[in-house]
Amino acid sequence: MVMPIMEPHPRGYANPVTLRASAALPAAGAWDAAPTESFSVLAQEMTMHFTYTQGDVGGAFDFQLEISIYSIAALVPAGASEWVTMALYAPGPVAAGADSQSRTQREYITYVSQGAAAEDFYFPVQLNKAVERIRCRARESGVVGTPGLLQITAILV
Image 1 (cartoon, helix red, strand yellow):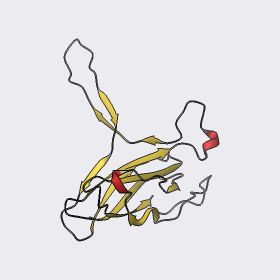
Image 2: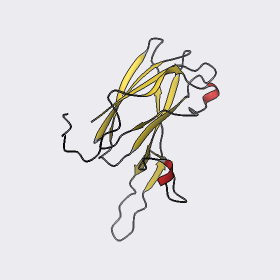
Image 3: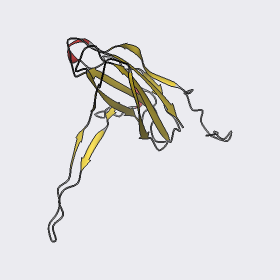
Image 4: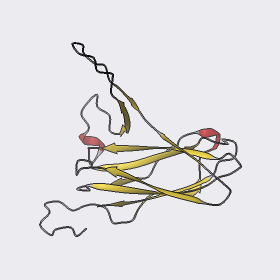
């Protein structure tokens, strides 16, 4: 996609964006302590590309996308979160004459390895030009004593 020269603000990122350099996941199933942040100003959508190599048979990893609508931490209002987590929505049943109760919870996604070789997949995300920064944290969730290797790259358009 060609970005028009008349955009009022610079994008702040250059594709491809490395969200996680290739490295072993943290030990004992802990989440990444300091996930890599990237600006995502004016991005309509993002495609995340994952490459995972299990550390042992049964390897798997979890990932969780976090977004910020604030360009810097100093802009976050008192009591608000700088980073918010992706969520999963489940609509409630509908019955005539009664209100419905739907549910939403923070979400993370698990990928389970199929073999010893490096495996890859992509994950599309809608940003709708409303997200200032992005980051993605990850953890080993299969064999937590033998973490696998994970690399994450994103393309924003």
